[in-house]
Length: 331
Ligand code: CUA
Image (cartoon, rainbow, N blue to C red; front, side, top):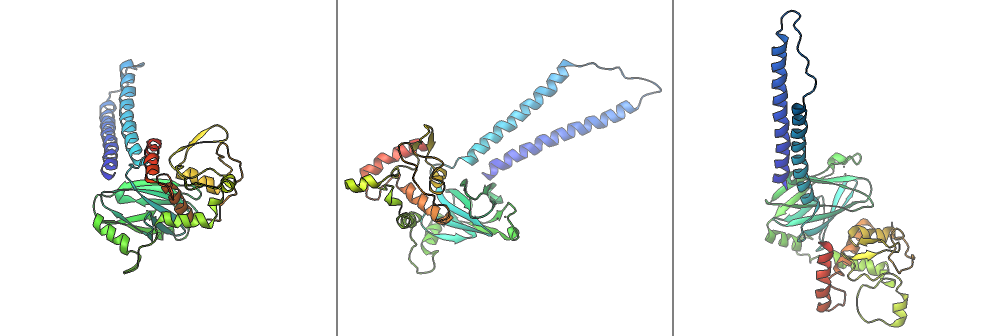
């Protein structure tokens, strides 16, 4: 993204310099030219000029529109992560960055990513507002409590890059810094394997950890996570919407409106279940706010996301059916 941001920035500066030069030159010329009058000589007054007024309205309008269109293009590119982006979760707190990879690896104040791979960060805060800022990538996004914000980048050169918190968040704000470490894909795979410590076995994936949260919190008492056969007694106790195929689908709500089941919606359904009730289900779910940490919440959502394509005991045909639907919803 850096070359695109820089090109736009250079254009804005360029336009500014051209106009500063034009205005300064005109000013200087008028100062000299019209100060040199003799005696009581008076300038003829000009009462309006349509051509001039049209010129100084249309030219700035056209220039402003080029800035708008160009800026909007860059903005949309920044706002929309590519479909093949790799997911990474970020939880900010006073005063550190906690990173979790889908594979289960966790790190603090460091983010390891492979080179030439789009990376999508889903971020939230445990306390106050922070801001995730990597100047070299020209990306920055506020990280808010009780909300998910996303940011994506694709690093093009291996190396170590600064990560800053760019929102004043308390005493140690200035020390809430970290590193983004961009690695060759093979090195990254090695890092994933061994980052838990030399010789240690690979950590459980984020989705696996999420399944543990799912079971521990008893989510399955009300929500089905699979497509397997059920006893009638069990089926009647499932009073919540099923979760398989939920992520990326369109959900119809009790008030007739529709919403896309993205990370934000699933998160809200867990922490604030009364806010959006799914059509046909009783408003019975208690809030899990404060009962599940931000990191566990992200793991839980990662687990629910995996249910979109493959159920815990779903067959391969199931995943084959669910996948195009997911893609269609996302596109
Ligand atoms: Cu976190 Cu400033």
